[in-house]
Length: 295
Image 1 (spheres, rainbow, N blue to C red):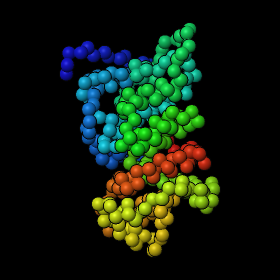
Image 2: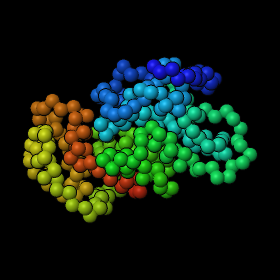
Image 3: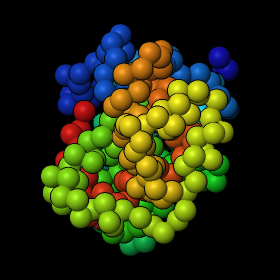
Image 4: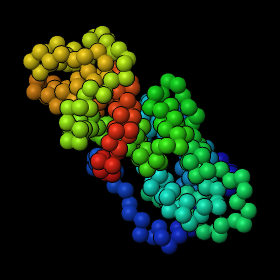
């Protein structure tokens, strides 16, 4: 620990009853695997409650990243901020949100602004740009090698996308949520649009599914494609990728193997990096994201 002054934060009244987050059991929003440090990071202050600014500015904490995935704690913080923003905008429309305004307790975030609205509100950034700035402070700048981060920032910057819809963005999903996302989506699309959606689910881009699967290190993926659902043919496009993802996620355990759900999901995304972001876009502009329960 260096000699820099640590500032403790008194827990405000509204946080006295803030629920503790259990990390002992798996939940739908929790990863199956343990996060590891994968890059430069900062350490949380030693006190159990602190501001987001203190957390980010401390000298040596765990990384927000585990490979290309955002770890459980940081997903929760970003999702909490998304949920808090509408009320913040209503109550403090003239205040510029900063990491100092976000209190972290038990790895969950609460916006805590007690100062009145300033009289001069000219040239204040929009709440969307404030959110973008906050997330960039947490996750870093756009990285072209991280497909989902690039896509997430693109959606944040689009004024036509409600920030609440970003709660369900694949970047913020756990491995369990990611695994069930295509399955739940197909069920909802069938319910709302029948088979009509299948003719629309194609961006014209050719995806050689067989060639991609042959590059996989997982023999189960190869054998499943070769024998899939008794001669099912997968078109070389986004719909073919979606159908393959759905079928392997449901039927792969009919054969003897030891793959976990997380390994199946990670394997699929490594082969088809844009499969979940394309599905997200299609849902967003066709039926919306509200059918997904906030877990």
